Image (cartoon, rainbow, N blue to C red; front, side):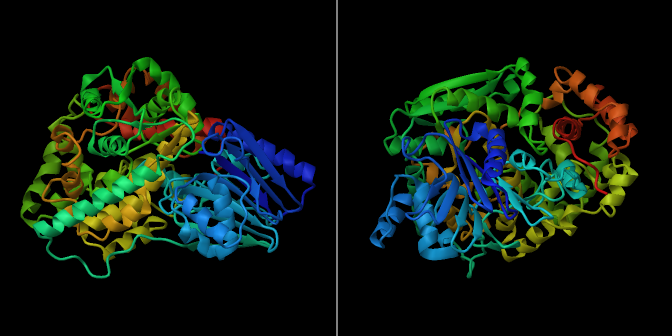
Length: 637
């Protein structure tokens, strides 16, 4: 857990530095409710909010080296810190605490910028090197922990775990970035390094930032790469070896994430990812083993039976929460907590299960990352089908036919999936599997976007033809088809949607979430494998399922994937209707200057009448308007 913030560059009095840092720290109190620390010098200020997880008594941050010349503020967990600590002590470093923060600090002292490659875990860390007057920022390989920064016109670099911390610094501008707004409405998240504000950026995953005397340099220290030699045909003996290796890596990763001085548990949906984590925790002797699940009064969205089966199999202390419509009172609170727009519906269940778990534990293990690693989403299947030449005549005939009929009232109906598939077929093939992850087409943008917004964007163009996604699409080409699709999600959807949702919603409940499937050694192993071991025919996560046959009930391994969603389509017609109509009215649309109201009204009317399902588009617009009301942004000049 933890939250960090700070700045370097302009000279302030130390009292003023402390006042500014205190204001910044207050915005991220929820990330570390147990302790606050500040380090202030002439041209540097570091702040940290900390919970009590490791070295409860001695882990106060920021921490310094022996002579006070190097300081660190650290967010996250470095799981191999005991080994690093032993090696560094052998090289003469003296430790005053049992924290991973101090191991990171001495690792930087010993190895310089090469220290980044020695760390294994999830982290966002700031290090002030007083001897060189240099600030170093680092973010973990997969981007599990967030880190924002901005370089002001006066040469001051400001950073923080969340945008709201930067906004607490005097003179940080709030100018809206039109490209970020367009990408948000298209994908429901904002890809790195963009943020919703023009001059504030996310430090990309697997990167370091060095700042000294007004000069800033960002470098990548880790990236998923295609195998030097693609693996050929895998026979039965080789498959057994690979599944054994995968199982061992998963078990090692879970074991490392069980280190804690406070109680921990696991989220349990009943799917293969969370079930595997729970099963390995039991195999490793975790006791007591506490699990937490969320369900819905609407049974078409409920998966509690699957979770209960796993809880019984591994004899866990199981807790459940059933989400009722009154929980939608959380809407404005949670959107306000997201200091930049995020359109993922599942912020609701993620927050509520986190809040429930926090009453019992301080640390939770989660199965996030499995879909991106092992090709678990339906859009991988859709992309594979779309590439079949013999289906081309059907693909041409289906969309105009399907478009004539209204959506099914059922969330999981075959008809709804067919409609979604046909909508994707109408998108450009060059978008790859993003065809099925795009919620606002270029045609719809032409109706919705105001002339001023379209002009600020330099015209409406496909997302794969412009930064920052163009570079990620280009990097796919070194992989086979399926692995390339997984790579694209790992670099975009996972880091800027899934991990943002999990981080912000668990932090809102002051709960630390650990993600064993995203250990970088597992990621490197999986991307050495051919795509047909992940998506075998139309079977998703094939090699993962084979590896888990020794551990999990078959009903949980081979059941149909459901997803972690809510009935937002229905709620916009009932519990959320007044909120939607209040925020998406003609006066607000005109005052904002970003959208044409007739296009918004047409979506609202067709959705409320049941003639079309505009839940994704209307929810994204609602989130943006609530965000704009709470945080504010000036149009780009």
